Image (cartoon, rainbow, N blue to C red; front, side, top):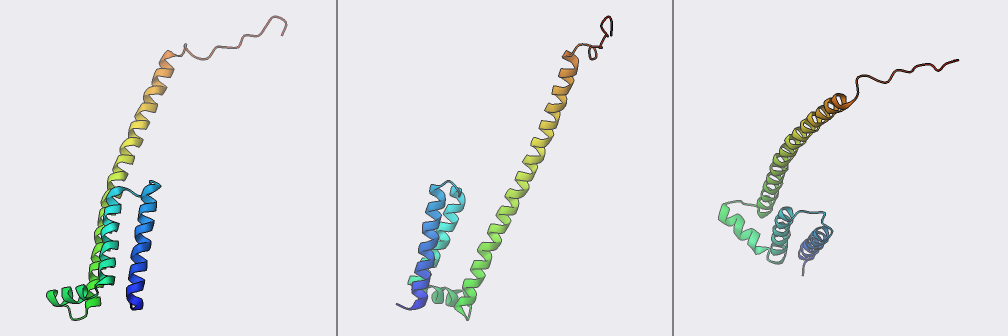
Length: 130
């Protein structure tokens, strides 16, 4: 076995073990785990069967197979970035909506407290002899 194959297998195995450990500890959501599982599986397949990359490069018309690999890796990273940007925007909107709701609830609570309070603070009256 060549060092490239060993390195690819070790890298894939490391990603898979880390993936399952993160899922076990509830640190990674399932929808991301599926994506990373397929990425690790793809790396494992390419490490064990390097001819797949060469065949795919010939099929697509890319002269250097590694260029196809870098293009696909860049594409995966682009899709991940777009997906995370979408979720970040959605979460920012939810946070803003929740902050507005909390502010309205606080305002309503303050109005109710003022309405339920007796008129003004009790005035201090001095005792006889003071």
